[in-house]
Image 1: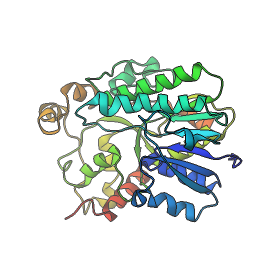
Image 2 (image 1 turned 180 degrees about the vertical axis):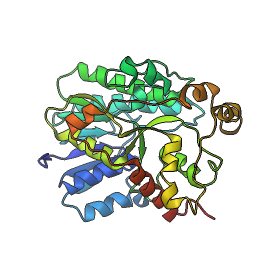
Image 3 (image 1 turned 120 degrees about the vertical axis):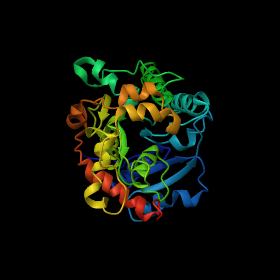
Image 4 (image 1 turned 60 degrees about the vertical axis):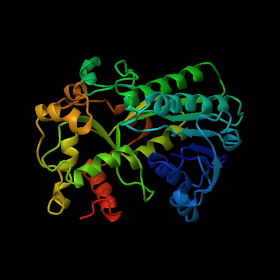
Length: 351
């Protein structure tokens, strides 16, 4: 695949977990990256990007932006041919889902795409959506045509009061397609990843994925982990999918980017061989009835969520990502080990 270096590209939320690896791919290909961040003066939080740029053929420029500040992306987008919109809040435990999830996701997407309509140089926008825009619970896979998620499936079960993160991703992606349909300036492509795993480029990653894996090493899952059906994809494979979505001419529509149909226990058990003698990684299944009984009390986990996800297989069709984007998926054992080792090195599991 030829990556054009004729014009700069914009990456929103450039300091994020997924965006970091995307920026690295672009810089190593010789691309000029306009990195949209909330605070360009926060040099410590951007050090991982500047250090990559120092040793790469590409270059990076930082721009101050805000998802909810209308027009704040105009300067950063000026002259860019491609916009990679990765910025969107990812949190499970929020007090005000409308303010913390829905508004930043939907209004931020609208802000970026409406700016693109006014920016003559923009030819394509790649939006980082999610498989969450296709389902709320693993049980939704079973009710999908053929018993698995495809790019034709939309989430119809999330709401402001149940799975609000999934609701935010659904509304944001629908808003993106609605805006794209009303213009002829740019082409829209979406990337829909499952749970993202693997090492981060920043020393202090804030992704929800790291909160999950932390519990596999700090003793929280010592008695076992639930067979909670999920999909998983390595962050490095996901970054390559974004690049392909941006630069391959024939790419169009939505793309499920998920390497594995798995569950929480299997992800945890992949750590046993390398770390099982030193850390209390999960080895056995936590019975569904126990999770159902104590989940709401200990972890604030709704019983509806337990019923619809624990011991329920998650299934999605990733064939389009392989064929259209050329994605190859590494074993999740490699992703989990790399991620866990990074957390050890960072002192996450203090003894």
